[in-house]
Length: 321
Image 1 (cartoon, rainbow, N blue to C red):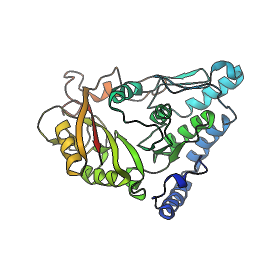
Image 2: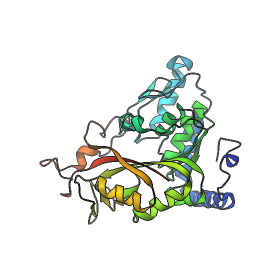
Image 3: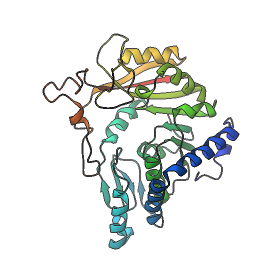
Image 4: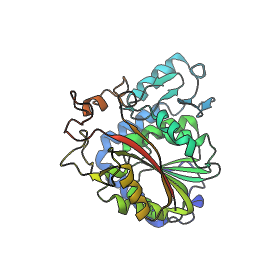
């Protein structure tokens, strides 16, 4: 399941026995999805022979390989395989000349983080909810010692594995685990990225406390969350869905989220950025042809969701363990 032969040695405080037990349980659970797993594995294996010579993770587009490195037949095979991993939520990517315009222009989020980004060089990092690994590749440019991507959804997991098989970044590790599994890694990470997670948790405060346990003393937490406008420390609790998304619980103001972090034990907590969402950043594309932001907002009153709630902001905070 892991690329790095010394993976566990880099996580000395991890509960390795329980981690392996949960991995085994996950594999057993996934056997009920044999058809889906077989398809994803076959897609990944169909392009596993491609090895990129050119890598560039420094810019907006994560670039793995150049078009001239493979034949036109291989490029056609690659394009077919990559389309098999649709929908692509995070991006953009360029894979041997195949350009993937994902639903989210994730480079914009990364650009907002850059001014407050801790030094990633030589650090052990967790990217919780890593999806297809876009941010893991962007982190790789800063030369961390190890980045562990926590992503429990097999679709995204195999998409990342396919990409990294071509990129060959041995210090980027995928785990079929979620934020609820961070307790297996006490005092482990120098930096944890928790982006797009908290509003899906029934108890966000307890979640933040568990996250803090996984940080080394003095470690940094970067939080990015859906939010509502306002200066009061309050949170919206939707009756059923928020912006058509099920499993959305507390949607806080920035002040409320800051208070959550403080009460979870984080120090020097600050709101570093807040901005309104728009279809410029999240939208349908040829690589994600389902509903997106424009479908989640009231067509008459763009300041409201389709359910009538305040339209979402995105808010970024930083704190230290």
